[in-house]
Image (cartoon, rainbow, N blue to C red; front, side, top):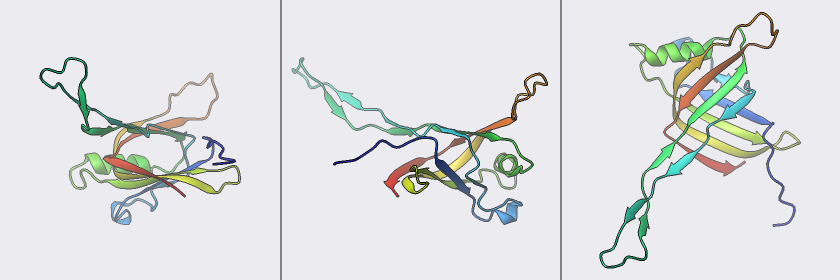
Length: 156
C-alpha cells in the first residue's frame, strides 16, 4: 500500500435528489455542491453484553442495533429557497415526510472523485436562518439538519 495519502476535507460535493421534485415546485437536484460545511456522517453500533453463568472473568459481546447521526449542512444563503420549500413540504399535510436521496463526494487535489457517501431516506429536520447582525458585515449562513436512515461509503 505505497503512496496512500489521507483524504482532504475541503473539496466535496453534496447532492440531494427528491423523486418528483418538479411536482413539488422544487428543482432537481434539490441542491448541488453549494455547501461550505458538512458534518454528521456517523454510524454507531451498540453492542449487547451477555454474561455467561460461572464465568466471572469475561463477558460476551454481540452485535447490537446500529444508529446514524444527523447531517448538518451550512452554506451562504441565496435567493434559492428550495431547501426551505422542502422543509415546508416534508412537514406539511399534503407531502408530509417527503424524503430525498443524497450523495456526498470527496474530491482529491485535482478535483477528481475519491470517495462517495450515499445516504438513504433523507428527511430534513431543521432549517436555521442566518444570525443577523449589522455590525459584523459577514456572509449570511443558513444551516440545515437532515436525518438519514443509513449510508454506505465506497471508493469513487
